[in-house]
Length: 276
Image 1 (cartoon, one colour):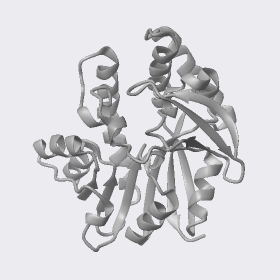
Image 2: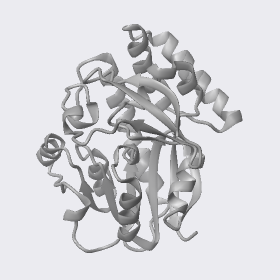
Image 3: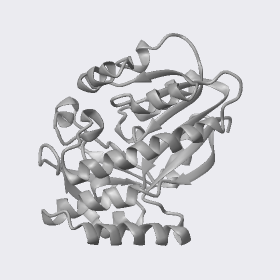
């Protein structure tokens, strides 16, 4: 693998990391990958674990999140056949599962971060610490909302997810795209690199290939329109120390418009099924 770029952990440690390009899979790999990642999540700024609603950026995130929760459940509803069972991996503070339960789903969730699990428990949503702690059963839908890029030992994790999925079920995976316009525009300051918490950095080709190696197939891809704006807002702050809302909005909008032609959206949702 060859060096793609060098960046750093802008949100927690300030440490430098390399991104190496895997030509076979068309993806980037964070180097080095720390053996103990827990410390890199210990930050009040890690919003998916804290439900923070203090700054303007926090409020923007939470507002978009409320709308997105509804659209995510509508999405999995289109794949509901028979029993409506959903497993959310990397469930954060449990909000997606709460919305899914309210809309008639039988839910289960996994979240390794203990603080996030405790916040979820306060909302009456119990989460398990790992996939291995789940009961022996299969699920119609398994979701990973910006989680796949965090998982160590990627091939083994995908194999485990496949074993938990019903034969006619769907895996719903949302990940950033390092080939998007906003990624190229911000370079090492692109917030969605988020090293070292993000161990892998996917292109659409990479998603298709890593799941094909486990005998799974990509059946649909959907853009995540809001992500380019939020990521651009964080990227502006990493680059200049200021939020620069207007610049971020411009870059986010341009990224979405460019993606209408290139299909390289800032983030995308991938619908994956069993069978090559």
